[in-house]
Image (tube, rainbow, N blue to C red; front, side, top):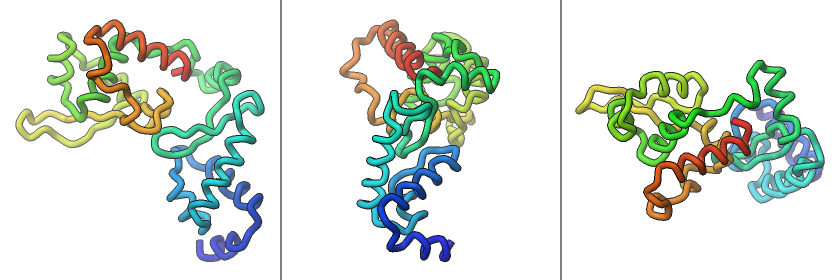
Length: 199
């Protein structure tokens, strides 16, 4: 690592762009500017400039991949026009969207999480075991400790949830008081986001 940092120090800006690009290619999770600066040994301002250049290079319509600012960091993703082919390659049909029950469950956990299955079931008014298990399998939910009073596992949304819905963080979700109390409207908004992101 020390040798790698020495190689990067004093490098021209285009070299830093190439190194940041490589780091984003080899990782499976979004990387924040601080992580990129630490890995490259570059100043945060220089990393920001490198990311701006990559965003221009990988802007929608210019490449089969795009640079996204999601889940608190930066990551490459398939361009919308390539999403269906990518899904076929991995046997994940692009049309396989989230069910209304899954969208409702994600909304509850995103806004109120971490929360337990009994809490989610009470809010939804139905058994949620299958839905929660499916969302865990898809990587959209993760365990987040136990509720000591109930003795039940608590769940939270994951960075994949943020990435799928194009969020930098959960703070970007609309505030509850800005939403009508109509569950149908919330469901439609989540479905719309999921369709746009190719969930």
